[in-house]
Length: 347
Image (cartoon, rainbow, N blue to C red; front, side, top):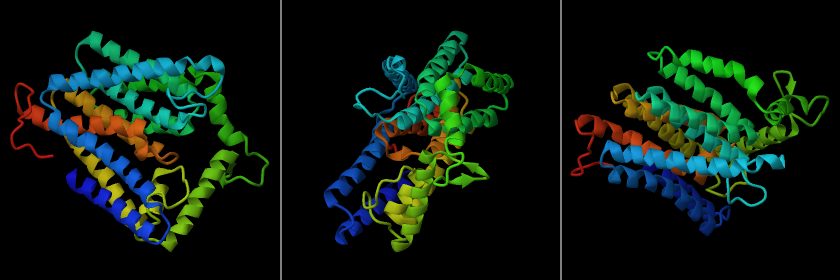
């Protein structure tokens, strides 16, 4: 991953510097944002260099799941208030959309381990965590997160063909979910397709009039794509364009077509290496972590259609942490004791 990571950071710096030269970007703000992106990949390199054995990776995973449990408990305390719930320490408004993306990712990790680990009692714990994390997810009322959960589930169906009991379980959950979901969740989904009926100021897709919120978001995407023609190569610079709540459109607007291409190559490289790790792994924990990461990553790719998923701290820090652990699995597989050689290690 070194090459795509380095190239993407470089193009972010270059576009920001050019944007500052022509007055489109406040240099301090832009570079601080780029520094935040670098902090994410720094986590990746730290974990890669610090990882020693499989037992350590298991400790990391349990720590991440415990953190998600704590966050879920705190957020579920907001359910009686009747509002969209979000993560702690966010102030009054919060960001339920990105919190939902975090939950989809962590649910995928727990589900992957639940499907693959052998001790039945441990498998039950992981399944319990999946169910537990789904409660706050439903109450986030985040449509992007609901959308992200669908390809995440489909990823499990595609990758777990040898586990014949998994598809029926997922199918059963899919059939029961409409009946088990709380009313606020059903209302939030139906709102997308009913609120805009009879209005002239909304976007129509395939004959369906969308709600005003989704319509405004789509309109902002169109404007960003139109404005990209002004600076198609390196874009407006990081923070040089107005707020756009869509990762791919934002990357294109801020770093141009060059930045978007490198960004997509980076995502594709992560997915390719993760799939290779899953295909060649033999240890149940390794396969569970890798399939969970692939499913969660796939979900985030769709979540990014309606959110700035890949620049959000609460999503990217666990994402790059797990990515590093998955990339280290081949080194663990080569050693019979599940230990990683520390000499001559490449990052």
